[in-house]
Image (cartoon, rainbow, N blue to C red; front, side):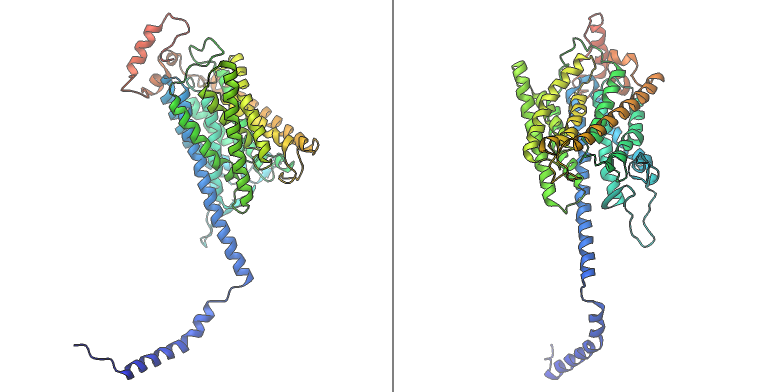
Length: 487
């Protein structure tokens, strides 16, 4: 039976509590110092860094997810007998790139600049966390208020894209070991050098206020021109006659899904390149311009091809959207939305003309990589010089058609020309070396039975079309010019 608590017991407990509070309360209050302007500013800064880090990581994940888009797009547009090869190359290219980007690429791109040309430190992510548990911030060539690891990852996702563009143009006949080698070289040297010129704060083009917000030149022009040189030195896939009409895609469903994933990923590519959430208006403008240009280019390419052929062509619509997205990648932060429409329309027309041009030159580009990335990467970069708004550009100079004179356009022309000359020369040396040692084109036997069967012993649809059937079909097709297994 509980005893009733008497009133004097309550009074005693309250007295003891009051005594304890009187003794210790001053120390407790003193320990919680009142907020000051400095402490509030530091708290706000830490919060901003946390938000920015989350933003950049999430958008970096989107950019990395674009590897899935590229893989599906290429798989859909290729012949069936080369799909396994394309899927593996897209997958392993990312694995190779992360290793060489960690070892060499990131340092060349964002290390301490040597004459504005290359970085000379920060290799192997050499800046480790401090003894006090603090993590290194940024990189010598970056002003972004991000920790080094976050910046590294975001830029790696971009680096992986450059070699993937090249893979598409060279699909179906590249030696697999050769693919691994050139992907590693691109991720370690050719791509990071251009990054250093443009995005390193001490790069020679950066100091001239060359404008490339998210990579029309750095990623797409580099990838597109490297792809063109590689496809030229490789030669066409077997059975690529007559010229002027691309072989039919093996699965337009995969190609469509891949393109939609790429468009989705572009919302990491462009808005993520703000590297901060501090200017929400800028993020909004970049997002809107990206969407408008992609839509305008898709519709334009669709209508333009219909006028030419009388058919509503899905492939040209897909590549049209990508052309507009590539073109707006450089100017998305520097032009008004109406200009994004013009850029998209131009991209939609150029991608169709570009495919015709490459076909006329008898260069086999299975996915139209140069027309999409090379041609529209250049156009998008130059569009800043024509349509840039003085209130938006880095040096507060307007483009030629916005009353700003030739200054901005001149720098854009110089930058694009320099990047093309370097990229083409580097690509000829790289692919020429691989060709000299017999590692550029796959063995001729693969042309007969298909690269999937020869290199991988696999078929993308083994329950429908077994590997053994590749050989049988090739034997049946021998003696028939212009016909090869599984067109």
